[in-house]
Amino acid sequence: RGVYLEELAIMMKQFHCIEALNLDGGGSSAMVADSRLLNRPGGRTFQREIMSAIGVFYHK
Image (cartoon, rainbow, N blue to C red; front, side, top):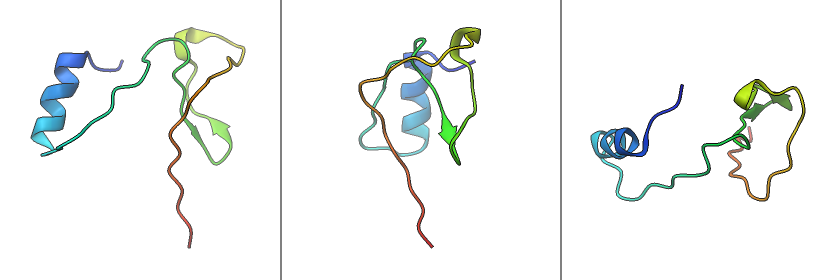
């Protein structure tokens, strides 16, 4: 389960965040790591197109 917007705001304040970004939390929400899909939003078995993403990359 994710968090509701109000819960997220409280968490961000606890982490002393000055700015935060809330993205779509619906059926298009997905997490990928090492080219593997880590979750199945809504229990679906197909991939859904997304229009935007945030990438976090680590280079050694």
